Length: 157
Image 1 (cartoon, rainbow, N blue to C red):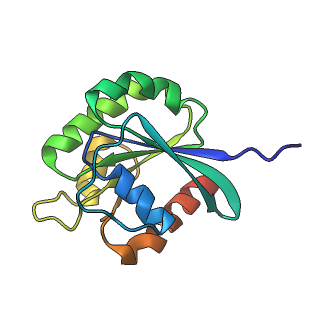
Image 2: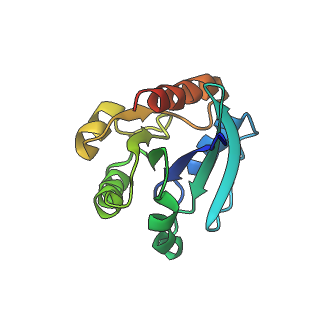
Image 3: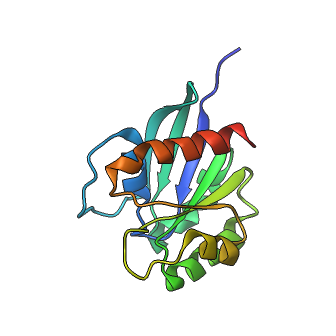
């Protein structure tokens, strides 16, 4: 029997920090001035000793038509927002629009908690209606926390 890689999809509007979160998880340098992800980037990783593929979906409007296909067969979907009121509303719309295509467990990351005026993860969770974790992708000291979140969510589905 072939051991299939689990698939984790990071999805959200452009500029919310999906790629930075993946870089943090992978132990890569976090580049503050990033170019937007074009279409899709896939990284291999290991969580709980199991191989997985992390799919970082480009958040610009022109790439959203591909999301429903990319979300298929995902083991975990991570919906990322930047913790601003406006972006949480857009993220809720994404959740409602694509929930039929998400065949996996879904959690949210309220990223950019280091910024002033960011909504607390508990408030984001109430607005989205799904389990939400606070994070700051630029803080290297949170790498293990990010890994722990994904490992926990993968093992408790």
